[in-house]
Image (cartoon, rainbow, N blue to C red; front, side, top):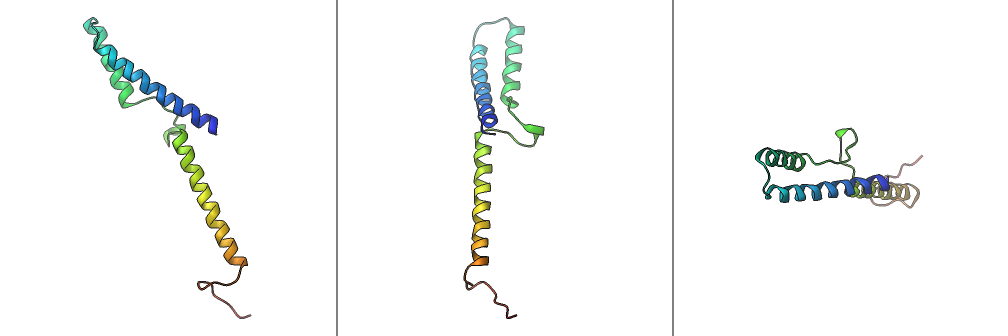
Length: 99
């Protein structure tokens, strides 16, 4: 999972580098039809950069992997706290039933 997320981040950074180089090419003196194609490529890459997006539901990169791991860790900590309160001494919020 980490490898795929790292690869997705590298792909996004490489796409940004290509876009900046294409914008620099736009300033050069080229024939008008080639300059138009360069402008179209720059526009397409800047509006829809290549990214790893499984099923177009989310973008897979290191940031999303870190967010998922943080959510899982938080969920586990909350579950552990509930388990401790179930097996520990009753606190002020617990109800005691007499059976």
